[in-house]
Length: 397
Image 1 (cartoon, helix red, strand yellow):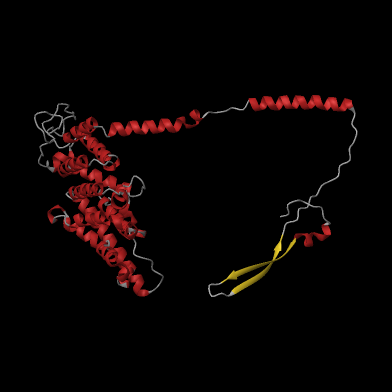
Image 2 (cartoon, helix red, strand yellow):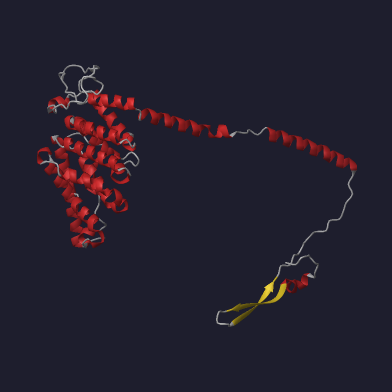
């Protein structure tokens, strides 16, 4: 800390670093003076060096070394010039192209003309199937009166649901159009802020799913398969993640109507009853272990495990002993209820979906769904969600 550096004896470094004693006075408002004496230390700069003795070299060796050095320098310079360089344009070009492509897709998918075209295609699904089962399939490309592309009718006309035999012979292209429309709505349209378009599409899909029960069953099967995915899981996205209330409500309404239409099939009701009996057996087995206190019992499961998990195999949704797609959906709703305290702001639409499933009329298989909800402990989970810390230990278990 000195103004100048002075040489000193290294053996006296401790003395050189000592800067003396400093007094610090503190005056209090009552007139008392408090004095503190402290030692002050400074820094001592020490320089260590190695003494090098000069040596004499031969001039010839020096010239030879100089030539070698110049050759090495030229080689290094050539290598430096050979380095491949890139500009900022080349570095950011892939990101710019990707952003431009995404913007073009969004501009096209949310264009009014494209939405109008998709609505016209969806209106074809509500047309009755008049062709005979033994005749080859033909697609009528004429504009129907129910299509919004027709100038004669401003709004689509709702057709009465066709009989079951006619639905079994429903053309494949109608099912493909319905699947494309559902993917468009759930993956694209519900992420937009156009409330009018969402409301209109929701009404159209609800009408089509009520009329086309085969299409509704295909949609419910797809919902069940997507429960094992993350970003593509529509139940998870629109029951616990989507921040837009109108999108969540629209998705819940479409899903509830699809499940109601799917329940009109006898084989779907039978599969759901087998799933319900499996849940009942799993709960009884768990209660038997608790009563015997044979081992530590974890919390109530949210899906079928062990010998009963075959009833939730999403690869076996068709056939005499098929798994229940509706049961898989209910099991996933149980999982969402378990994590509902973390997503409490979005729980209203999750509970709305459960309420709509429980309010399905008995004529459409509502009693079968209500029994499934009860055996899957959905009412108990709702009670725990409502009262949480105040819930009885039996419900907490």
